[in-house]
Length: 147
Image (cartoon, rainbow, N blue to C red; front, side):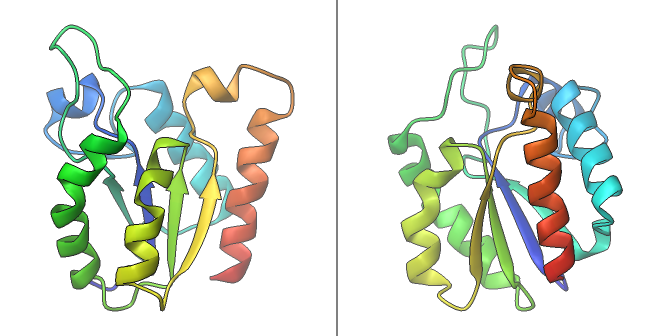
């Protein structure tokens, strides 16, 4: 794979489960925010991969729950397998707080990549306080300038 950027989010939400894949095109507000902000930052999709630190649904079927450190540890082998496939990877972007649980694993397995941390594009973050949208957009613009 030729991707230079891995965006590492938390876990698939109900819309991603329904569609069968994680995508900026999923019909939910987080995906919409992420799609629009990446486009505004000029980050080409073909240069990126989106993955979840826990690549399966963590919830009851009625409601998703936050991923835990234990969930992330269970998913380590899947993340390591993905990282081994990304030979052109330059950046891993930890999207939101839960993705940070994988930080050490990435530092150990891929010391050649730069780790960045950005807020999650969920409406809960973006709409919570004035300036949050701009903070996320600025982080994506910074990434774009480094590509």
